[in-house]
Amino acid sequence: MAYQFLLTIIENGILRITINREKKLNALNKETLIELNDAINRGLQDAVVKGIVLTGAGEKAFVAGADISEFSAFNEEEALHLAKDGQTKVFDLIHQAEKPIVAAINGFALGGGLELAMACHIRVASHTARMGLPEVSLGLIPGYGGTQRLTQLVGRGNALEIILTGNMINAEKALQIGLVNHVVPNDEVVAKAEDILVDIATRSPQAVAAAIRAVNASLVDGKDGFEVEIVEFSKCFGTADFKEGVTAFLERRSPDFKKE
Image (cartoon, rainbow, N blue to C red; front, side):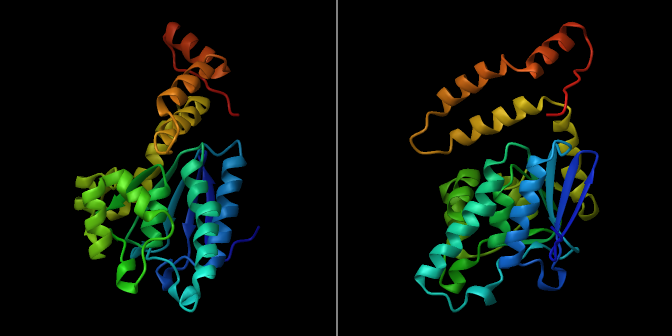
């Protein structure tokens, strides 16, 4: 699939997806979401790809939100489908991905842009990044998982303050409250995201996927995350990665985990 609004490249087993609508501050329109679904699915299915970096073109914005012009005249039913489709096809796809996905936040991450970053497993922000969920200023609330994922990441009080005021926070505040994992200089944000994935890529891909499933289980109502962890732990003992990892440890060498 040829992309109109994305740039993609695979280097050293890492797929970098750049949202390329710089003049629109990389706002998410319908076509961009369709392309993200395709690009992410391709990366997850490609055995060469060990992890994915999501970032935005230019220095001003990661993603400055959804393209408001597309839904400004929507009714309730249309809005329902908008939120459901986005959640299922992009945001939940990222959240449930069994390969690590890191957001490289290189500027404004607002509204749907911050929700996109929060769906990722790990977030790296530039020093000049600004984050927020300003939907209440439009008479809306976040619709792509923002109320849920922000609360999971920073706690109820911090989440409510960010959502109810609609104000932006800077990168240092985001780091302080646990919204991002790292803050780095502007020109290092993608490199830092890739460094994390290079590190993860040396580990067992089967164990990485199992760990993601177990951690995600803790966030699902009605699911016993401890039980999921026990099951995933035991299943690891039947994998080639476990045999290679233990053998390498006993032989005092680095493990050689094979590509899936």
